[in-house]
Length: 167
Image (cartoon, rainbow, N blue to C red; front, side):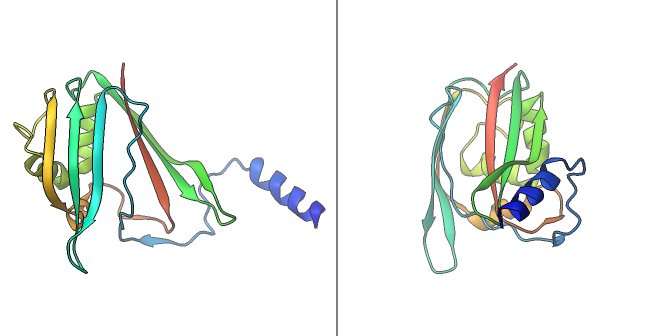
């Protein structure tokens, strides 16, 4: 048994191809489960949570505080970890790092950007977003499904970490 696990580990660690063609792939439906705020950032402070209003409707409520304008002088780093078949999160399943954080984040969100800007009462829906505290009384969770991202990907459970830094 130990030899089998050791051989399997070596074959996976030496793999040069990250494509994983044996995994099921296809159109998917995004289901948002939880939102966690990281305390490590000083630029953006978030206090967001899901509130279940009815059996079929959940909303995002809370606030976002920008201590620095969200503009194109910042760098955006998005890292997705996938849930491993043996348990635990496997980091770097998808990695997206880009300069011009505001413009590229707006492009990535697509129609969701306009929904967020209205719901959080941003002064406008273009970049940059100024310093301030932006509060929402409720944003339908289903509105977040209109992201401008891949429409086909490997099925599974993913955890996204967003990091915004000064260049």
